[in-house]
Image 1 (tube, rainbow, N blue to C red):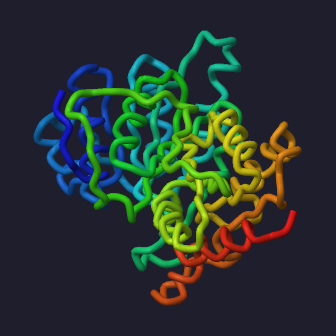
Image 2 (cartoon, helix red, strand yellow):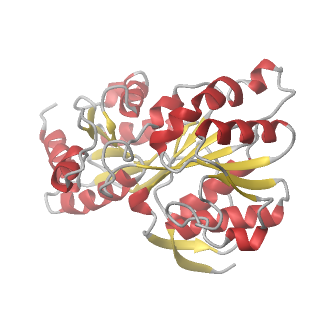
Length: 330
């Protein structure tokens, strides 16, 4: 097995290519994924390799894409549906929420819906209010759906292959700012189990639980905190549903403090669920300070670059919150 450095976008593409080579029931469907190569060029070259019967360009119809994928999954295929931006996944919600998520339960386990819905999420590209949202918690709330948010190229490949092989519908979310990030990735197929968090950095003074691009910022913040004499442990849940509660709770027991960081707005965000998970567990008795959440501001993402920058947590914000949390007197 060879390990080499590739981009996050290349890791996503490689996962899809290798699974399509391995399993002829896997196919892609979405807007501009063929000749154009996808809005972020993730599927570039796949039309030439697999042909138009397995790389299916569609009209602008998110509901139709999700419906076709759901139907195909029910009859034995393993579709990968791409929605161009997370902001438009709500248009596909009827099929995802009322059909794909529920079929296995409604038919007593006799039906499976092995589909993956991929979508770019997040701000930072100047795409403004209607193309920059982080709506992951909308789908965490739905029984029957799994939600995956990888933060590194290695995780992206392993988690996507695991998602494609899963017999349940998976919402697979890729932050736009991560596509160009590089990391070491094995050339052979491998899987990372859904529901397995990763401790990205060991620490003793507080636990920072971050998702997607915020993992990268949390790690940068952790290095700056060292200069203040603070050692932060950084945990990436990787999958929001299923959630690896054991790793998170044990870390908070060890450090006594928890800072939760995500880009989505705080109200109704995943940070509230994480906070409840911590305080309802045995970790509550070990807390030396209240659980703190750091999230996006309660506004649509602005087009202005300066305002956009300040609308979501940045490295300096994480440093400030972590410092204040550690300095808080028990």
